[in-house]
Length: 484
Ligand SMILES: NC(=O)C1=CN([C@@H]2O[C@H](COP(=O)(O)OP(=O)(O)OC[C@H]3O[C@@H](n4cnc5c(N)ncnc54)[C@H](OP(=O)(O)O)[C@@H]3O)[C@@H](O)[C@H]2O)[C@@H](O)CC1
Ligand SMILES: [K+]
Image 1 (tube, rainbow, N blue to C red):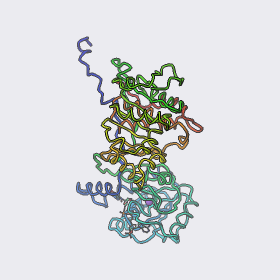
Image 2 (image 1 turned 45 degrees about the horizontal axis):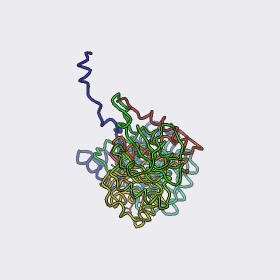
Image 3 (image 1 turned 135 degrees about the horizontal axis):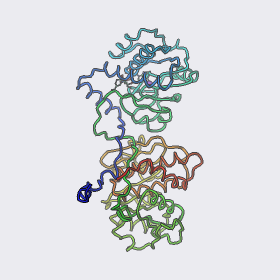
Image 4 (image 1 turned 90 degrees about the vertical axis):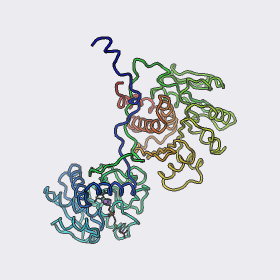
């Protein structure tokens, strides 16, 4: 290749700096029904969809459980219909299968599916336990708690089984809220029909679901407003990059040295080219960390691409002053920890002048203090909080939910429970800062940060502390880094 040809190679594409591979949509009941209707407009009947649903569920079941004899519990609606289709396929494949019905099928599609299954169907009372229990009682049409007789039968059959699989959602969860309508047993695998639902990712139902596999039934889902936080792809620095082009993150120090240091080192390990601790001269840390005195001039530095404030800030007068000065800048912001405490004390009105991209990362307690009047399930609360505050809200937890003021939202895959310890939130805010500083919009920045944080925790494993997260952030980074 000649030099002139080399020079005409495409420039570094900024879009690849933050692209994710096909996020998986999460469909609430209404969106699920809409996708079903859209499929029908394109020529699929409910029978077709049920056939696909049952076939893919049977196939996933066989991969998961092998030839284990199965007992399938079928309800009156289309979830029960899926169950009859699963039964037909498993029987065709030579797997011993018995079916017990809660009641006769009530929908046309379920009646047809029932009629095509040539095996015996007993009443639920007569059902005998099998090594594999398949729950096709109720799916997204579950409208109330299970009656006591049904609940105790389900519990007994579940205890007697070696493996438990739920079709679409476990019978007894609220599909949109992720709450439990009854005290149901946990499953080893849930086969989500067509797409994930909030119940597969929100607690407590996410835990009840066990592992989740999505059974594809060829639904077309465009521009979902709710997604699962995807594995990101981050471009490696190019030869043209230099420290400031990779992002300058300023971390505000304060009363508690360790927390702001954790946040700063996390920002460094999350790829920021330049990280400065403002106002934390006495704090040690890596030699590559820059220490700058707190001053209006330092804060006004136009090279700053993201300002993190809150970890270790303190709740005293100094903290209040620093927060107020930070809010007066035009830097993209990450507000966490003590900044959130002070905001809840001073009132959300302090945020009225904020125009720049801003992420807040409360845990449940901070969220409740900040948004006192907001109630409901986690997804609803975070969505309302984002609309009310005009900020990207990251409500942390085993099921972290991120929402934007314009109504988009994302839920994480279940996080490892070892993450519940001091300092892990400080690390997350530093990673958020690094992602904002590399120019991502705040929703993508928050999603990427939560993914990297969760992956670092998974890699760190049992007994991890916040410092270990920073160490494992590098390995998490390796997994998502693509050549530029
Ligand atoms: N989306 C798709 O594209 C596709 C979806 N498919 C499948 O359809 C499922 C949704 O089916 P669905 O709408 O018929 O509702 P479903 O969950 O079977 O339950 C409704 C029935 O249960 C009853 N019932 C409710 N709660 C109860 C309780 N506690 N105790 C007793 N009864 C209770 C309720 O009675 P009612 O409230 O009307 O009195 C009604 O009779 C979905 O999850 C997926 O598996 C695929 O087949 C095709 C493609
Ligand atoms: K079910």
